[in-house]
Image (cartoon, rainbow, N blue to C red; front, side):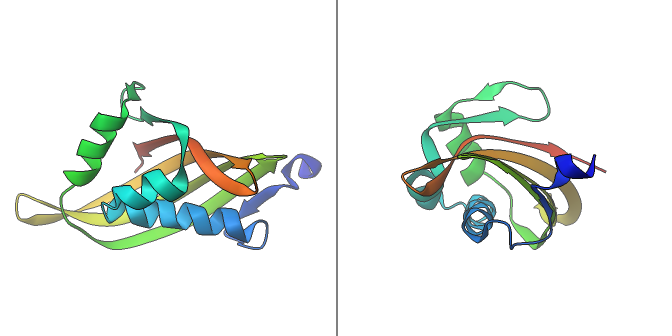
Amino acid sequence: MAAEMDNLDIDNPALDPELRRIDDIFVRSYYGKDLETLWSKIFDPSFVFMDGADGRKVERAEFDRGCLAQPPYRNLVHDQVATRIEGDTAVVTARNRYEREIEGKWVAFNTRYVDVFRRVNGEWRCFFATVYKVS
C-alpha cells in the first residue's frame, strides 16, 4: 500500500509548490468574493462546480451569485491539505474551518473540498470542484 501513496502529499508543500499556491489562491479568492481572479487565473473554461449537499451541477451564474452572497467570515484555517498528481492531472483536497456571521451570531463551519486540476501550457487550471460540510 505504501507504494500507492508515494504521490500523496499531506500538509507538505514540497510536492508541487505551484499547484499548492494556485489552490490557496482559489480558497482565498472564493472566500474573498474575488470572481475576477477565480475566472481569469484559477478556473479552466470548462470549470464545473458540484454542490456537495445534493450532488447537482451548479452553473456559472449560480456559482457567482453564491460566491458574492456569502455572509461575512472570519478565522479561516485551511489545513489537512492532500494532493495527488498523475501526469498533467491533479486532485487537491483540504479542510476549511471558519466562522460565518449568521443572523448577527458567529457560527463555526467545517468543510472539505475536492478540486481537480489539469496542467495546460505549464499552468494548473481547476476544471472541477465540490465542497461539503464535515463535522
